[in-house]
View 1: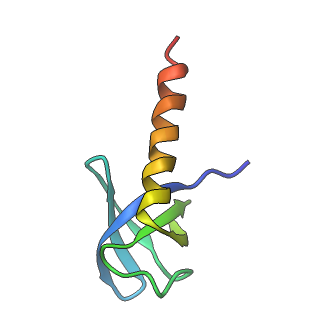
View 2: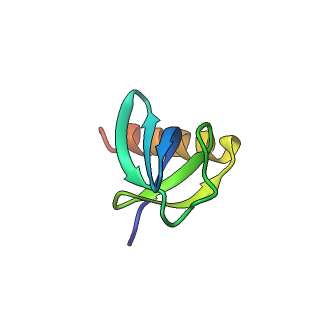
Length: 74
């Protein structure tokens, strides 16, 4: 099973981007999503943005991740 996490693009430089979610920043490749721009949300898997998503979908996915994390603490 593969998992992808939503991140917001902060800046781009060629095929690379700095992304952020919940205070965590990472450098990733946007070679697979060249249309992605700063301010866009992308799904990130293994250091690559694999799909652009809208903000509502990103926030819903992050909410579900938080619920899973909370449930696993018991």
